[in-house]
Image (tube, rainbow, N blue to C red; front, side, top):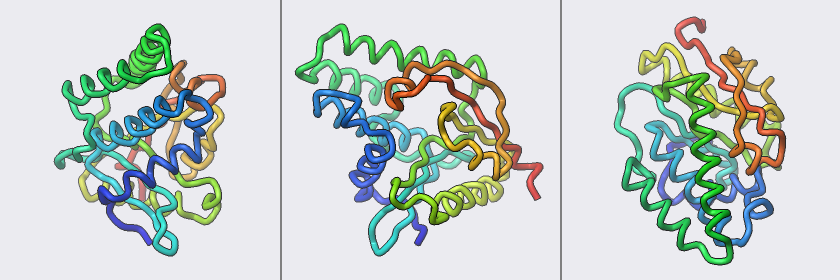
Length: 211
């Protein structure tokens, strides 16, 4: 079943993020991983005005957060300057990690955004965060989520949407919907949380050219 995201789904979405990208194994100590999972989901929500989940027997198995059109953004707790300040304070207060390492994380986040904007300077309409837990993949949930987002984009008369992904992802999935590579960039952030090369792409989909 597909339904709108609700605040009660937040924790499950962070669990799915961890299942897909293994934050708990890549970011230590555990309170650092907990912060990054919360910020990854909450920050993506704050940049979105469209959020849906897919359920199986009442359990959330996947979700998609995106922005399309001019509807009001969702309050995910990390909006604007105050959201950035909140994250900075929480990161600085994390125990068990050096100040140097904390600033390293801030720097790779900034480098990711700088490199990405050289390829695509706007974030007007995009898929912000999209994940299906590993054991539920292959059941068509991802296709249903993406189709719902594309449908919403058409309803909002959006001409084009983008998304970021890394070289090691199943990009054939996106190409099935008509997404095409706009450009490539290096993301130390992608490398940090995926454990792969950091080679990343901006994909774009021309909604106005779809049937």
